[in-house]
Image 1 (spheres, rainbow, N blue to C red):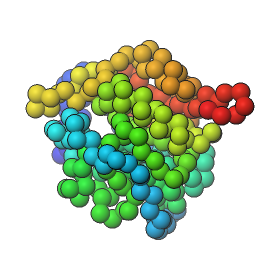
Image 2: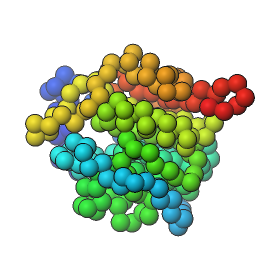
Image 3: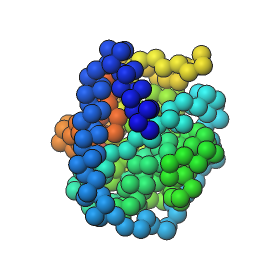
Length: 258
């Protein structure tokens, strides 16, 4: 783990992304400062299983399934984010899309949340990474296809996930998020508009600038909320190099339905 962190820091510094390194350092500081709260408030995770109903348990045609990259290396978490969401919503319900190792989902569950993680690739499950095998509410699921969880969520997250989907899959995902998000809930999204290739395969299937993402999310029935009112820089899990960090809420139509 220390070697991987040092390698990541070196990569950011030498590739001209020192601002991302600085944000990541703030993230780790926030995580460390929140650890005493996390340890003092830990509990036994729920034994209730919230399995998704889906006809597509694995994203078989996804580059991340064909050429596993982030799903076998990303183990990010930040209990400062867990603390911030608990302060706002109490012990609510959280859904992490593209959960990778499931570490953050498990952190939420240990604080008493109903926490569910969905991962399109089955590599983390097959490798037994992170919380897979010790927490029951981590599942493989192609989130670019319709799925149903019999639970509404206060917080839904997608940390560097949406760029991995094609535009038609993004529209399906947005419809599914609208179905599962509470009226006062938030959807936290980070993304990027750059290219990312692994073994000659492009991992990012949608590369849009911030303006295009804003236009897209509004067209899908969401409103852009000020990020700093919900999650501070040191509470983030991932950071965008081009300002593609969004907190999204549902646009409520007359009559009260989104």
